[in-house]
Image (cartoon, rainbow over all chains, first blue to last red; front, top):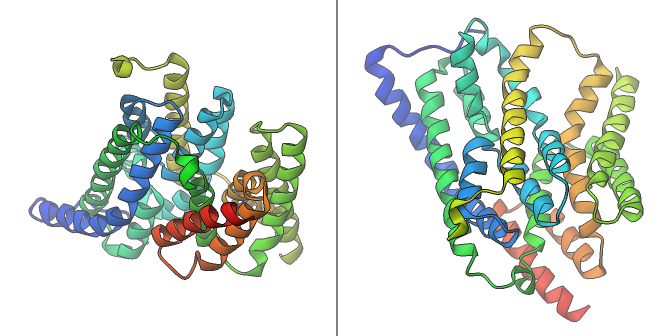
Length: 235
Length: 101
């Protein structure tokens, strides 16, 4: 497989524009969630500046929902950081699949490009196949970055006006969003055992330490253990 | 306006979370060139994101019958309609179900 290429200077604007156009379609779906995250962040006590810093520095949607949810419930900072890390561990796998493309790319350029690797950038990059260029990568990445940053900050500005999201069932949006993300990870009945193990462990630990964040770690470990055991069994 | 002041703990959380998230992004290509995961470790890593999401929602989703029913509803429609639609319908369902249950 070939390394991700620098486009010839003349084609850079075209590659960037193509990436931006592909990203706009994704952005149309992402903006409502950015607005939602922003309004929930306002409810959790974050200012628009806090939200902007988080979107600008972390730039990972589902983990930001998790961080805002936990922060709003007064979880310790370390637990928030650990949960964000756990949710984003999938990047390791996604990055691993792109490894041949980054072989031999100067570390600084690879490090900067990979900062923008969200689920969507990764998916579009894979779809581009051998024709992947840095122009296209940054066209997608920067468009999503600016859009996500703007939407989440706008949501925080508007969200301060929303009185009580729970009265409108908006507290359930967290659950619904995570269920949709989960549905995207479904690969068949084989997905169920680790998920059931995780749910069981999470419920037990949450009963012992109610509201605490430890049920997340317990679920992750239980689910991972079941998957490891099954992975060993089938190989 | 206190909007220009950032809570110190929150800033530390954001910077630490951002740094670790960046490491998960650059870590894949970096690690793959250096280690080989066994099938068990690979399976565990692969299952981690889903397990985390399940653990996150399980306590709240099953906290009351109305929310559990709405959770089931969202699971059934999540792969059939766009995400925004599934979330909107799920929220609408929970509002109705909480009122009648």
